[in-house]
Length: 251
Image (cartoon, rainbow, N blue to C red):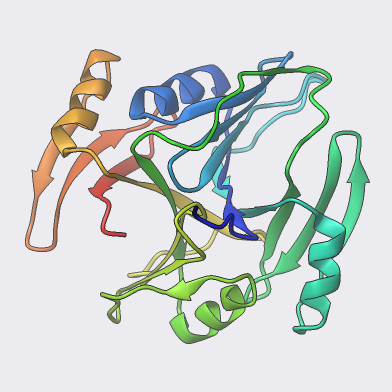
């Protein structure tokens, strides 16, 4: 039996289009776990890693621009904070109505969320989904110091996978954790004034790429398989207008 990792990646997409974005992720192949009664929050699970979609709140909140923030999911935030303190990682945490939440800093001092597995489903529809399917979630982190970032995420059990180079380093804490992909920035500029770890959502599949492409085409998305000197992958644009690549899963 595969041991459950301590931490699982949970990229959270903040979007003004929660319904289309949720439908898109279902078309890709992720499984819906929870949907808030307000329809502004949806939680998905994959074969590895998880994803959340977060729309404007029910009190009339606004969103300046869609973006994806990095979060890690764990079963007990307080216990995690105590353990991480012994490793020199400070976590600020607090109680929410649906569980405890926390935040820590990455190697560059940006905020990364620490979310607790939600057990109180009042106000949510529980779809009963369990990890599975053929999609592994990747959190693409643009990094100027792979060694420092790998060391920081190493405190959470993420280890460097084979096949790394100066432009890409993949980190994993086990089959269920999903992947943190450290990517050379190539001139990418962080949003001005942002203190959060904004990332990009990436996906991998254990199925033939044609299977994922055809699911997206059937749902009305203009997906295509593209090959270049580096890889063959599915290209598609999500409802927020972000370019998304789906690669074969290499483990």
